[in-house]
Structures are given as structure tokens and as C-alpha cells.
Length: 412
Image 1 (cartoon, rainbow, N blue to C red):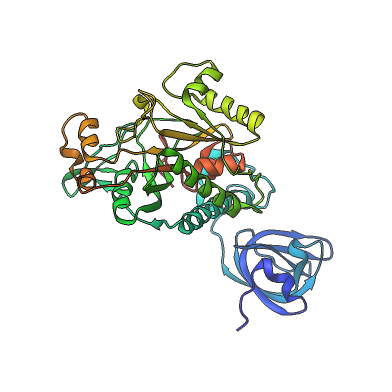
Image 2: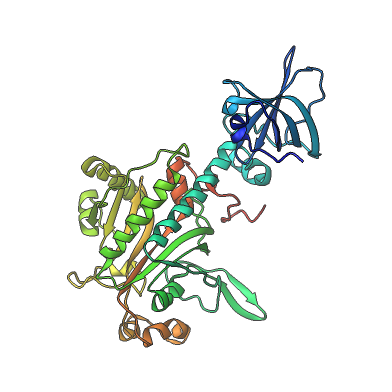
């Protein structure tokens, strides 16, 4: 039996008889010859049928094709299959909602999302998901190299304790439970086990946003590290993680940014002064202005904003010891959008007792870690879909999400 060869490898087998397999991406019938373009996970391959009257399978038919590899600079990858034997493995029951062979996506976003299982086969849509996957691989490699341990934390939790977002309630064998808003409490606890941990996983926010930058479920790239001096140590690790992600997507046909050796930083109060605003948080307009300012002043598409007011940070955020009312928290802006939130955390048990308002009972499991001694620590969370959208220039975060969940969409 002839082993399957991937489309991207055809040129390496010139003159050999090989077998490829995939989907019929396009068929074209000319006067004296017919062509099939076959799509597999590596790309496209051209198949030449010398008999123009040959019966050619329709688009999205799954086929296995055996033929001789012939060099052709005009074919995808510089080679094509001639003298083909075509075996149909599965026929489509219906036509796709739009032509997948078009160089651009000839359909509206709702049409794409409604037909995601087939629409995502389009090379452009698939490319965004490949960039997302490569980014995660780069994130893992960078943190593995810095001595981090990957962890996996529960996504069903007993208490809705983290501030700043609504939660999805569920019935857990007759008891109330919630989908986790983040792995924050668990990753802090695991600092007491491994010192440096990270997680890649879904988080759930029941916020009724209907914008191009929000989802009800998204993928969060989280990290937490112990024995920090302050939030600047966390920012330095984040820089390495982002650099690893950038290097991992280099060559995947995106506008890859340069990550400075030291990402420029600006204090929240200075950011407010520059933008002429006086609010406790940055607006989307301020984020865009500050990103443009960072490019002009520092030549950087990345900008740290540090020292957010304590009133806008969760209770576990460490205050700035030199500026009352401000925190050792930060955001990372990238191409006009807040991409990462992070900072130094409280680490002393008594500080948590003072910071938590209301009854302590919902936090008992969380507080266990601090009751037995925790080092100074901090961490960050990066939204994968926002990152991918910024890299690809997508106007809507749903364009780079396989099966988005938002205010209106629960299927497919």
C-alpha cells in the first residue's frame, strides 16, 4: 500500500508515484484538460486529468488520489499529480453555503458562524485558527523554558467570588454552582506548590456585552509566579511570554510585531493626563490613543499601563506602597486594545482578612493557601481571541473564534 503524502511535500517526490488524500477544493474543466485542486491539512495540490471528459467529483468530496508527481512551477507548491486514479471516500450531501475556493470569504459573518463546521475549511478562516494554535504553543514553550509548570483547574466552582464579572449559574447534582470566571484563585494556590504555574483554558463571563471585542466564553492564557519583588517582575515574564508567542507565529502570513527588550510603561495617572480624561479606568478610545502614542514616542506596538486605581482592581491586588489609592496592577495594550491584565497580589493571610468585605465563608478554600504561608507573587491573564484578532487585523473577535459564544449565539 502506498503511504499518503501531504500536499506540501509533493515537490520532494518528483517522478515518483504517490498517493494524496483530502477534499476537492475546486474543479476546473478546460478544452483539453481538467484539473482538481485537492486540499489537505498542509495546503493544496493540483491533480491533472488528461481526459477532459473525465467525471470529476464535486467540491468538498473526500478523495484519495494516486498519480505521478511532475514538476510544474505554476502549480501549488511547484508540483502536480498526473495520470491520476481518483477514489471517492465520501460525497457531500449538500453544497457549502459559499465557495470555499474563493481567495476571500464571500459571505457575511453571520453566515460563516451559522455554518462554522464547513465554513472554517476556507483557507483564510483556517489560517486564523492556525495562528491561534501557534500562539499557544509559543506561550507554552516560553514559560516551560522559565521553569513554569502547566496546571489544569476546575471550571465548575462552588462560589461566585471574583469581582468584576457576572457568572453563569448551573445545577450541580441539585446544588448551585457556577462556571469559573477565571482560574485566579487556583493558580494562586498552586504558587504554593510549584512556585511558577500557567494554564491555557476556557473562562466564562456572563456579561451582556454585544461588542466586537467581548465573548461569553473565551480562552485565557494565565500565569502566576512566586518570589517576585513587585509587579515589574511579572511584567518581565509577560514580555518573555509575548515574545515567545510572536516568534511562534512568525512566517504564518501575519503582520508580526517586534517585541522590545523592555516594553515601555506609563503610569495610569500620566495616561490620564496625556489623554485629558479623569475616569477610574481607560476607555476604548484612550486605549487606541495611547497605543498610537507608544508607536510615535517609543516605536512600540506594546505599552504597559501601570498603577491602576485600587477601586478598579480586584480585592487580591497589592496596593502601591508609595501611592495611596493606586495598585501594583497593570494592563498591556497592543494595537489599540487592552490585551492583558495582571499585577502583584496580596500574599499575607491577615491582608486578605482585611481586604475581603462581607463574610469569609465563600473564600475559605481560597484562604487556606495563605494561612500556611505564601511568597510574594503575581500573575497575568491574556485573552487568546483578542490576541489573534489583533495579529490578523480582524475587525470582530468572532472572526478568529471557531465556535463563538456570546449574548446571542449558543450553536453550532
